[in-house]
Image (cartoon, rainbow, N blue to C red; front, top):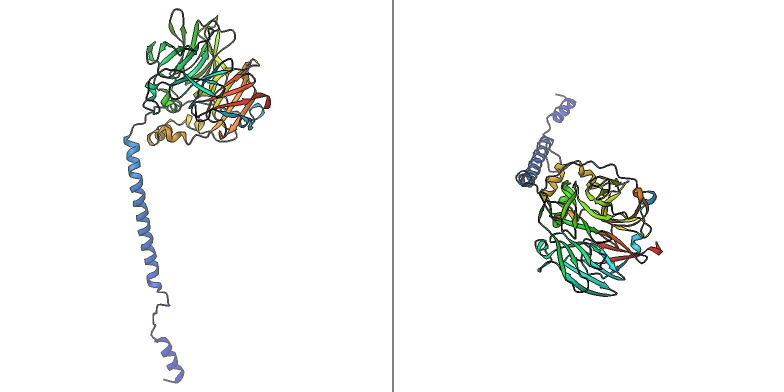
Length: 416
């Protein structure tokens, strides 16, 4: 073997030494695959561990609501009269943290009267607060106590200077604002024409005081479950008439979806009724040739209407505490055609939790004949006036009630 052949032999048969500095390609691929499989199995196991109880809950628990699919039109564009603004933020809060949930407002002269969440009718005179009457009995404050404590909602002044009050649970009352004496005209909870008065809401009275018209929002749901009623979209609401002379109680209109605020028209042959779930206002004929009929005053509002009150220009103030933004996304519109999602949501979350996910947006609009909007005031996010339920006009100002906030707001109309 010559020298060149020996060198070639040594190169071919030189031993290969594996050190820590050199990668071992024989084991790298299999180790990576094994680790990946362990990670995947762990991830899937963890997911099953977390999702299994949720699936069990979904399958076993019954939903408290049996929602119906309802058809809402595409919300109107928020332009023109509905153009967003910040005018409601010009309002001033009154009696902050002294009145809770002043849903509705009435006035005798410059003295205001409101019903509060603790079952009281109170008088607001200047800066002073005086309790006029308590319709229910304490204790008050919790959801469970609301039905016995009472929850005054709609309030009106009658021709004799007395107050007519709609309590969601206890019924319809006539209250003497001086003595505080309260007379029950209609008992809440009674069965009328086969259905229970479960959620008495708002009322309106004729000029002679002989007839009262009021809304019963549902025979199935009470006020404390109002979000259940909205989500279920049950058509079990009614308008009723009470004759103060004969004491006769009759059903004027039925099968409405959350009838809410109510307002007599000047001729007293019709009432406007806010059908909250459907984002519209209906006109129900209570007297005259068209008695028993119904048509639509305004359809497809950009929000969900609550109370309706007259304006000094011959129109009507309509309060809305939630809107259907366009452009934008309306959760309630999205859910209206998806009952199964509603059922799932109410299996998992309480009404109190869900309220936190509903965007706050206060809107007050003045509507005239034909449902034409002439002006609107907005407070996006409800920073100053939140959860508005009513706009009551008096002496050049709008007094804004709320079903939830701890104050009344006052908006000077001369400044907006």
